[in-house]
Image (cartoon, rainbow, N blue to C red; front, side):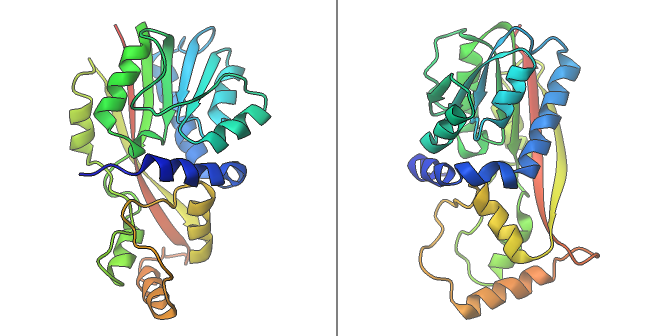
Length: 257
């Protein structure tokens, strides 16, 4: 399986820097749940520690971690996101690819990463996080698994056979990537976002930078194809009439002993 174009991903998320926080309700929900899992397993995980927020995005959780007493390094592939973070007062910003962290071995007490590593080679990224983490430190990662955005994928299949939704690892593949981590705690759940109409749903994806799809065809959609897409998605609307979009979220928490 080919990996996404990192340069295009960076440009897409940079363009979304100023709209991200207003639209990122699911991203905040997932990040807070990841923090809850971390602090349940390791109650003393934050205060006084050096933490790498990998795939920091707009810096929402970098700021939150700092408020808990941590010294935070905000790392992201998107330069526009880091510029936005710096404008919010976060000074420790590092332009970085999660698969090749520009940090020394054992440089941090913990690595926090919420909904970023689905754009990466997961095993390689976890190995990098493990490398830069000190003994008795920890990793806390949230990612997406197969079945995420299935409504979008299903509706597009009624239009053509092109790629319109990103590929996500299965839960078994995620477990396999984690096999070198001793006693890793994995939790999975389905979270559903709801929208009053389809345009709101698609606009939300764009505003959080998640509209990048590897291999998606370029060019205008056309009225007929758009109507086919809408009609197919209408069949999937929730009983109350809302338009739903599912995310299969996997949380990984482990201590480095």
